[in-house]
Image (cartoon, rainbow, N blue to C red; front, top):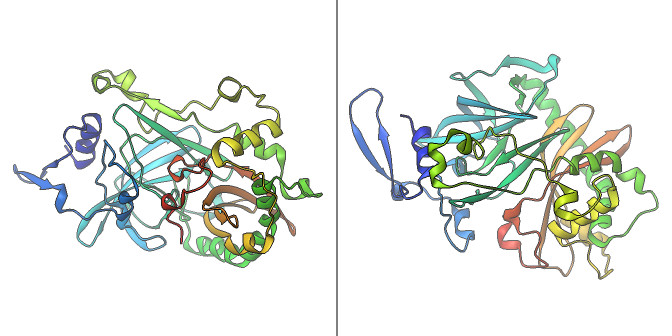
Length: 370
């Protein structure tokens, strides 16, 4: 039994949280590792109460964009992507990481196929800024939008963070020179992306509709991305561990149902305005009713992080911004496509619940974004 299987058992029976049992494969020795002696994720302290199901994968030790030698220990397939389970060593500690990658790859950029049991040098970026907080009998699902793919995943206790990598496309590793080109393109265009995203953020923050709305947002493609949202919650019972069919419903490779806008929100999913503004009101508490538009302050607060690059010229970016005189930090994940010298928002991912973006104010302690 390896550590992954032990963790899987502990997730099903959270009473066994105090210690991890480790069986050495090369010796008939049973040792107990006291989890209290392991390093602690400083971001766990943001929660008022500790999570009922805790995960000790130590993935908070991984530094973004640092290169690590990962061994792929498992690959799970979902309708639009894959979840890869990987292991590496950081400061003599075994660290697990869960990597998400979309299906499909550009043939010219392929270096080699990623296989279970093999080692690969990869750079990672956290998709969500916070560690997952999971309940015993219920939890949430999360959406990982990468290009035109949306991978919906049960936040079930098997992982703490989800990572993406510019080094991967589907089940293939990308050539290092092609990865460098992606990063250079983003660095070169970051200022243009900020300039062109400003009117979109004014649009969602204050409801200010620009005259050239269709020049900054592709409503058809944004509506398509909204309709890919996964359902918000899953549930389980401790006895599910004995029933494969019920247990499978909260596993990582279980296909998550899509959110039913008509059933849950009583709106027409084909109507862009209804879906878009309902999402903003419910998930972001936007737009603001006070029309105190301060363009310069909004622009200076914008921070972008590239999560994925796909052809043709589509940037999946994490966008953080602040609105003057509002004690709140907003975070959204968008797809922005460049066509010639124009940039359009073509995708809007589901808000991450841990950020508490639905609050009118006071979510800043839940958004560790410097």
